[in-house]
Image (tube, rainbow, N blue to C red; front, side, top):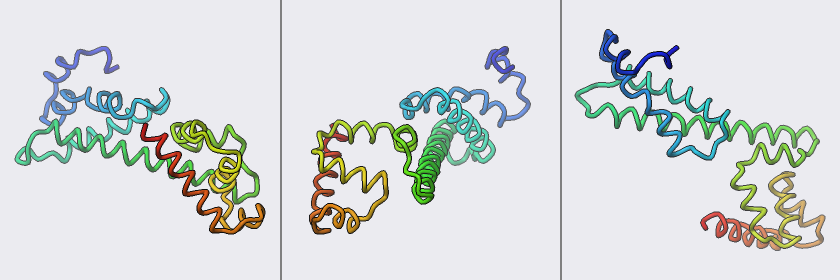
Length: 178
């Protein structure tokens, strides 16, 4: 229904300052998502838009004109609200992954790809890890095995496993920062 009206027409009909602010800055959540959260798929972007619009309304409700420019205040409020939502979603996905591991069913690759941030997964794949390093990574990150458990199964010391894991982290960080 909102798409049927010109934003300027709606702003002219708005009865109070709050509604005028919301209508004037209706573009802001989409602009922030396009600029800062463009790696998300379309379904996630729709969800981020909803979160952003709710944050815009909250910003308009709490805005005090004596404290400065509304656009800046709204931008910060929307951005940090979306960022918190994304972080909470990641935590929720990791918790789901951990619950799957606790239940004894190791997740298949499809679940892992979905639960772990796509960029990190691709970075690990592109980091040119040795077979041993990839084995340690899978056991430690995806299967949740402890360093001691890996060491016992591989017939090496826990210190050796820790050293290999540090090398893996360095490789992945180098690849990630490129």
